[in-house]
Length: 107
Image 1 (cartoon, rainbow, N blue to C red):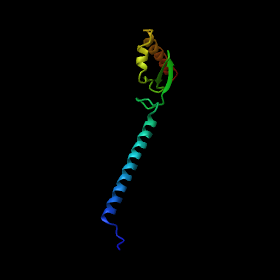
Image 2 (cartoon, rainbow, N blue to C red; image 1 turned 135 degrees about the vertical axis):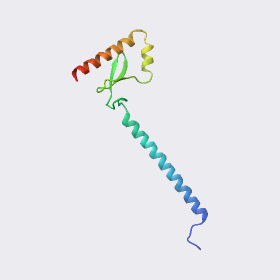
Image 3 (cartoon, one colour; image 1 turned 90 degrees about the vertical axis):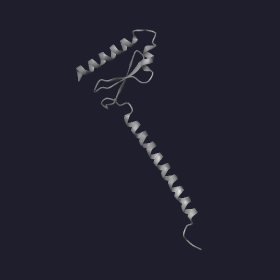
Image 4 (tube, rainbow, N blue to C red; image 1 turned 120 degrees about the horizontal axis):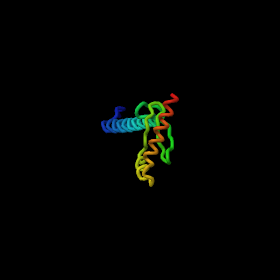
């Protein structure tokens, strides 16, 4: 009897190894993508600073304290546009602009 593996055994273990490697690589890519996503959460897309959330007329707006950029999440602009008061959009942006001017004056 030979201790050498048969061709079928070699093929079986090669397939098993390939499947394990594929599974590990897939898991590694998923973990890297999740880590990358977490590193960008609530970061300014322009300068990378931490965003601050402020509420103006019932709508949460993300504002960057460094570059003073203003960001709306999905649906927030629609919420402002559908507001029963047609001037709310103007008032929200006026309030945000005033807030940014005040921050620039203290910076």
